[in-house]
Amino acid sequence: MAQIKELKRAYGFDDVAIAPGEVTVNPEGVNTSFTLDGHEFAIPFLASAMDAVVNPAFAGELHRLGGLAVLNLDGLQTRYADTEEIYSDIASKPREEATAFLQKVYSQPLQDDLVSQRVEEIKASGARCAVSVIPANTKRLAPIVKEAGAEIIVVQSTVTTVKHISKSQRGLIFSELVESIGLPVLVGNTVSPEVTRQLMEQGVSGILVGVGPGAACTSREVLGIGVPQVTATIQTAFARDQYFEDTGRYVPIITDGGIRTGGDVCKSIAAGADAVMIGTPFAQSHEAPGLGFNWGMATPHSSLPRGTRIEVGTKASLEQILRGPSSLTDGTQNLVGALEISMGMVGASNVREMHQAEMMVAPSIKTEGKIFQHAGLGS
Image 1 (cartoon, helix red, strand yellow):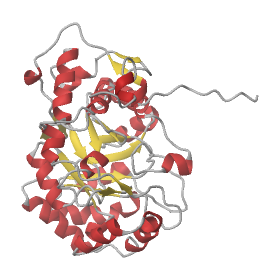
Image 2: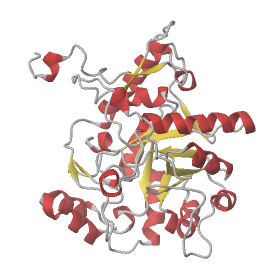
Image 3: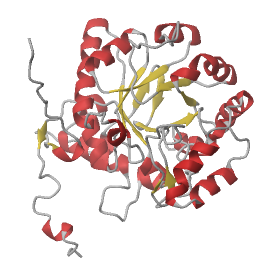
Image 4: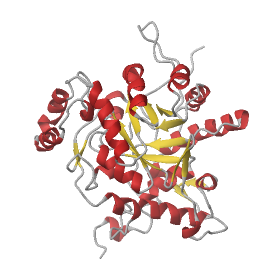
């Protein structure tokens, strides 16, 4: 029997607010640490596997500040031994030529020796090494990065599922990868509780949540695919909690993409995320290799680019973006401080207690009483 398709309401960061708690905690006393399969990080921040964000030097600096950077093994770092000139050329291209130029430079083949070299460079900086691969290259590259000393592998595509139909006789099977590689495997991206549960049953160590919200991603415009991040996080966190109740194994949820401010970080955690993955705000740091630009991982696609090069500027050091001090009032700096204060206001002493914070639909939360700010009349 035919049925009318019904539309569900879904919510993004600007649609919701976090309610204050009945008990408050001193911000200096909250614990923001994040644990991933035995690896503990002082802050729940990962840097996206984007070429304009992470290179080995950036990975070392984010490690020093308590987070984890993920290096893109399908990008410039493994196609060119010397990337400095490539980054400069990308930054100098006129807007209308940028995508075609990215398609050209990404057409060069991956070099296995550079894969090993980049892992070794990250390890030499003292950082824990996390690398990202697309599903098609995982079987070939995973053994190489393990031998080179990588500690965490991220298998990432725009949309990831366990059940995949293709012409390949035997595709990537996550349970076999987890068993054979012997390293924590993060998988993404998804927005579905059903797929989240299925991926966890494959033995993966973490789930990346988000389809198309990134500032440099155009998947939502090109493909029409995506779910707003707050709803996506709530749905996948529910699957995580159910899986934990059933098995006793806790698999972290990482909200990936669309995060611009400290408020977005706090809403992600309150919605159920154990950590956040950030791209463009980190691309604005002095340490990022993109020279004030950012572009999505699918931007260089040879036939259907789903991203664009955006000029984000170089605003501050990575330390100032994460730890402050901030002289800005737009929430784009001191992201860790914002999370600590928000946790204190809802009475959460750690990230998992922050998951219990009350949230509400509040589309006027950023505009109520702010006429002078939005009119540009404030001092």
